[in-house]
Image 1 (tube, one colour):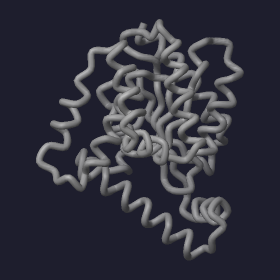
Image 2: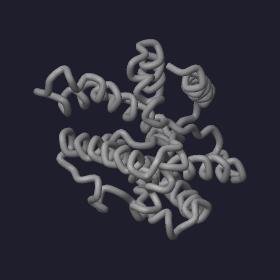
Image 3: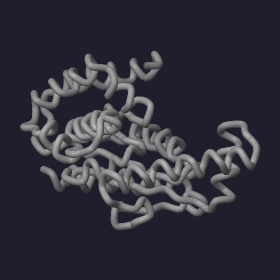
Length: 232
């Protein structure tokens, strides 16, 4: 696991160990599904920045968990076990049974996805996390405190963003986008029989070419507050 990812996970676990008054229903959390190049990491940066300006403790101690971090935790027995111990400390959980039944009958080829889904479920139960990708909206649909976002944008804008971010040409950016979109569709179809383009999977779908990140962030702050109030 890259050292910066390890530090994020360790900080997250340390913060939660000190937070002894977690509500039984858990804190709110956010999942972000996105088209490649639609700006998910820009939104995450904006959310964390704006959260820090809020007076409520509800917005303290949030962390972003993207694909690399979640999969790294899933493959690290010590970190995965630490999360399991933390969840058991505050919640009655049947995560193992839930995930085993979800993946029942599938080959060992899906072992990493199984572990990844377990990690996502535990993170959502603890709350105050932003989970990017990995079918998180479907994995966590049993939680009422989740806020599920979908980011979309016109293909031309997404190609331009991918070219800039990865420093590749137009054709290569298009190939990368197609490959990633195919993988994401396959995961949702295989494990959940869902379509990533189904708007009913999400609370809100944002066109990031028409709506600024700070506008999305302001709306999400309101949603987080409402979810927290509803769980009290």
